[in-house]
Every structure is written in C-alpha cells, then in structure tokens.
Image 1 (cartoon, rainbow, N blue to C red):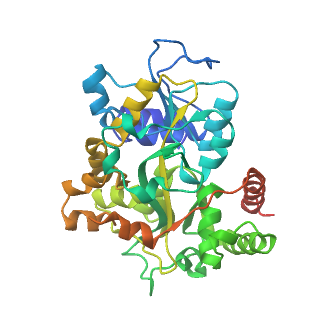
Image 2: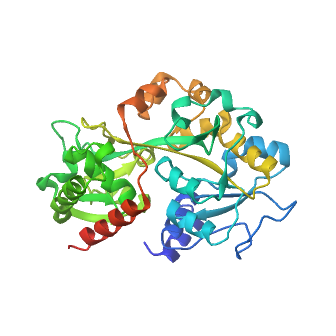
Length: 370
C-alpha cells in the first residue's frame, strides 16, 4: 500500500495511527511534533522530547506525565534504532530515546547518553530486575536503559490453512508453503531467528563459521518467501486474506488478527522464540527532571496495562500483570509470572558495529537473490 493510500485509510478509520506512523517511518517519512531542524543542544526550558518508534508516540503511555504537566511531551519518531542513533550522532537532541537491548552498548559507547537515577523514578521498585540487568546496561547501580516493554518475534500462522505437526521455525522453511510465507525485512530480527533455526548459540553468532551457517539457512529460505517487509500491517493483511499462511511477526500481530476474527496462532517454537526488551535512555543534554518524568510514566502501571491489553507486549512493571486474569494473559502468550516467559525465550546478545554492518549487508544480498 502506497503512503498516500495509508494516509487515506487512516483518515477513513481503516488503519490505526500506530500502523500509519510505522509505515511512514519505514520509508523515511517522520511525523513529529518537534521542530524539523535538528537541535545541536537542548534549549533551557523547552518542551521535553521523546524520540521513539512509530506507535509509541501516544498519550496512553503518558497519563502520569500528563497529570503532572498538563500535556504529553513532544514526539519525534524513527523507523529503526540505527536510524535514530545516526540522527542523534548528527546533533539531534531528544531528552529520552527508545532503543532495544541489543543496541544499548553501542548507544552507550557514543557518549551521548547518561545513566538514569532510579531514586527519581517512583515506579522503579516494580520493574522486573532481569530486564535491566543486561550486559553493558548498568553503571554504579544506575541503568542506561530503563526497560519499558518486552516481547517476542515468532511465527504467526493461519490455523485453518495449515496444521503443523509441531510449532517450530521449520514452518517458515517448509517447501509446501512456497510463495505463501512472509518474513521481516530487517536483519535485526530475521538473522537472529535464522540462527535459532540453524542451532547457532547466540554467544557464538559472530564467528565466521556460524555467520556462514546462518547465511546458508537464509539462502535456503529465500525461494520460499513471498514477502519481505518491516511493515507489520502488510503481513497482517496478507495473513488475513489468506495470501500468506504463515509469517514472522511480533506479538502484536497475532493479538490484532485474533481481535478481528482471523484464526491465527502465535507459535511457541520448540527451539525457542526470539525475545527482546526495549526501553528508555536519557540524553546527556536532557532536561534531567523532565526526562525522569517521561521515563517514570513509561514504566507506570497505567502504561504497562495499555501495553499488555492493547499491544500484547509484556510490561516491565510487574504490577501491570495484576490487572489481567490468567486466561487473558495466556491468550496473549503471557503469564502472571513474566519471568517464566522470559526464561523460555532467547535474548539477543549485543554485537560489535562491525558485525552489525556485515550482517545487514549480507542479508540485503540474500534478499536480492545473491
């Protein structure tokens, strides 16, 4: 769907604001409530700015902040964390930015961020410790990234169209489904999912032998794929129509499709799902007080309840899970004891910039048929 069609669909109520912004960001169009020109320094007394993925720039995540300040912070969106980091390296200053765990060490290494003070966060005591005790995240007891949401990348499949003998990543490599499979176009998800399929331990993913093993698995898959895209709406629509019988997606897609009456299942692969956690980092030139207010709102029970109920993602705030029954959580692939779900998944391990560049270049070659 072209961008003008996305905007028309949004105006007619056929497309959510989140999906519209995600699609626009994917092609480099940014909708923002901040000045278009990058700022080389944060102006004293100016509005706080939250730099995030499309779909997280919504008042539902800022009810405590709005109660305190009368309005949400200003927003600016990016289509991917590397895009966001590149913009900040070029001089753009946002008080708070929204990366995911595998990017944190590289973001910290730029010197553009400062640790967050847990003493300034009223909701800190309810944050699940395993989500912030990540490699390269803590400095003198202070986190660089305060976790907000976590989720999984797995296989969403049409239960009325295929009946896999077992839930496995093999679904996306099954020749019987040739031309009816969809995969995320970003190596940030797909390379790691292919590593799970190939049996490559994440601790050893960067060795030359394992790099070639993952590349070979992705080349094997290439002739079977109908769609590579970072636009979840495209995958969801293709699953809903039956054009695709299975696709690599995030939790939210299965939640949305089931809500629309489409018979789908978000698989629990026998090999394990790809698990990720994203959160908030504070810029070195941020308004420290406003930045902490933004972060505290993002990890509140109110925001966590919204993330679980509307997006199907896990909240970093353990108390948010108390707002749902066991049955509701089970339908979302979650649990009242989120640690159980987290332990069952496979967390990405931060890699060097050299590996990231090599991985992305190789995946682009594979998608192009080389």
